[in-house]
Image 1 (spheres, rainbow, N blue to C red):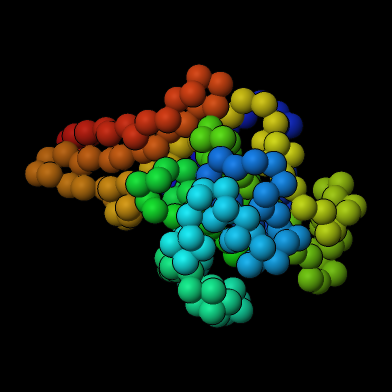
Image 2 (tube, helix red, strand yellow):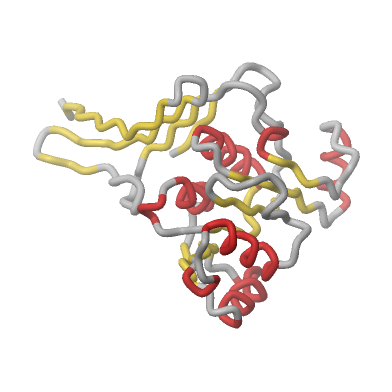
Amino acid sequence: SVIAIAEKGNLFNAPETYMDKIATGPIEKGLVDLDFALKKNLSNLADFLNKDISSLTACVMDRSRHKKIIDELKQLNINIKLITDGDVLGALYVSDPKYNVDMFLGIGGGPEGVLAACALDAYDCHFQGRFIFDNEKDIKEANLMGITDLNKKYDLNEIVKGDSIFCATGITTSEALNGIMFDKDKYISETLVTHKSSNFKKIVKKICSLN
């Protein structure tokens, strides 16, 4: 369960369409880009991290739309971490070396891209997204929202402007957060909270009585 909070106008008002996304940990500007070929992005990242390209791990949602990406990753001998759902969590994996994910990429929801960008901003990570408008209904709605350049790619600082707060509570257990746990007459939850300006990044555990 995820929420992001910022002052009015500071979070991009994303249309309910798919978004092509790419995310990494902190890197130099211009190193990884949606317009680059996958091999170039991976090679650039490997050089920056001083790693062999075959030691990189990419996280991708296990969807048929990602078959081409997954096939190319296999051809390049890249380690692949497939996730079944939750691309906000998938993007978060690049925020900490303990998850052993160097790059997150693929197509997921546009609003979820804004949520992921908000979280990654607190970790000074790299995120880029481009909305996918492939039907007249979505194009019309985008135009009504003020989006005129349908092919524009958005950097993190265009998606999240200024300060923001991000919270994600685990419902089911993942590598990042434990899901809701019950213990006799109480339940325990874990919530990742980030606050950009105070450099706050912490998992908060809460114990609540069922009575």
